[in-house]
Length: 244
Image (cartoon, rainbow, N blue to C red; front, side, top):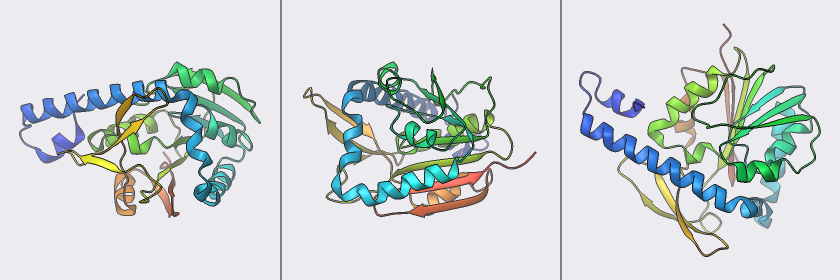
């Protein structure tokens, strides 16, 4: 896969060695993220139990329920179905996708407020749905996308949504004392955390914390009606795809 970042920096001549380094870095990150979330599946929802975050989480739930009232939703990186269940409270139906069967197995055991179908899909290569879709959603996935792959991800995601679709992303704000400390930032501007699981294993996990200007810039020329809301612990980005 060609990197948008590499192309933008070298419009006339791509530095192939640098590009190969980016691609190798992207593949290593993707593999480590998949492995980490497969092993973390049974622990995943604990993060939503932190007492100091409950007020913000209620705001997010309200945002999601309002945004997808009556919608036919395509969800990327749906994980254990925590946010799928909240979407389903008001949506007409949900197609929830994730690359990990471990988290999908947990999600399938839950009760939902509307029809929910689950599919194993790569977030970077979503398949055109056979059912009607009117909206796109992803919670806590944006922060795990390498900056060099963000544009490609958005292009692929938008391609499986209809013109005028509502799109909502939400993710974490870094808060010292509540967030896991950043262990390093690489030469591409991606930041990482070191996380320990119940089995004692340690994992280096990509976790970016974009600013409002970075979020706005990411969708500036491909979205309409952009709205960004920053809470203490989370942010929400919503917009519509252009008509026609």
